[in-house]
View (cartoon, rainbow, N blue to C red):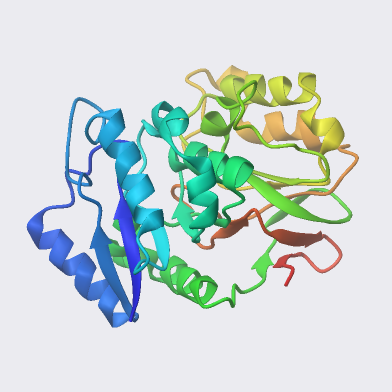
Length: 289
């Protein structure tokens, strides 16, 4: 039976009680996986799952444990950017394993890819397995764990075309926090995936403007937009998130599509550090083997 290490590099997980942990273990075992819980995964200090050093240590131990087959975050919140400079990326490269996360884990996932070549999937973390409404997402994730990620249907096309490239990104706010650091990836020829939650449209606009002014939009091969639930303004006169996307992507020079991926609209996972093809002619995003 394969083993998944669960770590908490970000915020505490108060929902992970002895009862829910038992339920989580049973859920994973029913799918053919065992859980290895990080030593500090249940710790809590303010909005962090323990001190930075402890959370970084759990990351290193999870990847360097020879009995572990893949690593997954328990939840998001905030905290993974604080530990990026506390990791041994060469040692992580030598012990590469698939990494699964979403939300704040985007920072750690991007750093692991950029500095250690570690790939994985965005869109699924441990606590999602306890919500029956996520069963479709879980089955998609399970297929991906077995190397058979289904083709992802496009929900909306913002700019037509066909593109192929390595996927980077995840949560937009967290990803933006890495610009100017050693952990931000080379964007040349990449497919940029973005999702977010509860951000005002003008804030999403500001982040997209930053990406454009930083030259990112000049380098990428395509864009995959996920779910932006709760991204609404207090003032109806400000317009909605759709208007922001129209401003930036209506006449975009490379393909831009939107899919059901993210915090709330959870239907699929997205490979990170792996190659995908966007094809608006057939309305699919496909992982390239």
